[in-house]
Image 1 (cartoon, rainbow, N blue to C red):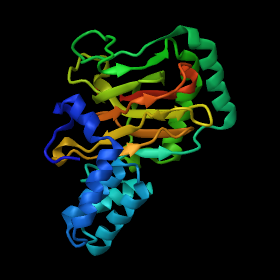
Image 2 (image 1 turned 30 degrees about the horizontal axis):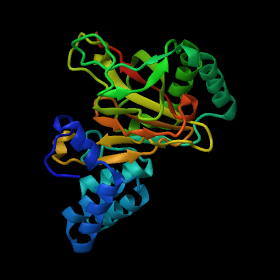
Image 3 (image 1 turned 135 degrees about the vertical axis):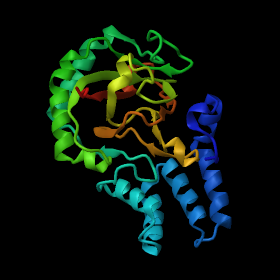
Length: 296
């Protein structure tokens, strides 16, 4: 993680290199060897590297130590809340808030999802990208994935269940968000096979006329064959650009887990490696967005 790089302006090759675990491990080893435990900046950098490696428990321990030292440390307070699954203050300093729910779907619903997917494999279409100012397009230099052409059968039962989960698991307070009226609901079923990835992006658009303009809450449900037959495919959720750092949290695509975060935050999907060309053995998601209803 390098200071003063705004994620969306960084060259894609630089982002891919600087987010590789082997590079982060080297940074962490060097920093640990020379850092002073009393140096808050050094402790924060170590914590950022640890969560960038997906080592959340170790990062949380460092944030707790900072908070024990100074209970008014707002960044440490926010980070502890995020990784503890506690409510977060709106617009809090620190990492981008997210919620992870494990063992999300019961077995019967998981099988229902697999049944639909197997039946629709012959009708998958390439995933697309867009800027909000032009038509959606295929662009393998930005994104490689395939999705169900018509996910209505999944949407019919998944979206009502999802909204129940949001209330039951107190998702909005844990993201620092107030309750909101839901408008449009979007859902995709997306597969990443060998070489699949998605460059750094955010799910909203700057053009008010674009369909993505109203996206407010992003959800990602992960599922795959067990045992897992691929590597990679991590979600990297970047800290707000205002933080002035190139820091992020790595979220592994754990089977039957559900992730939420606010849609305007930058994120990327790391490359998938899978020895099989059978896409069913790859990384699958039910992903989408809840829009905030327009206020009259």
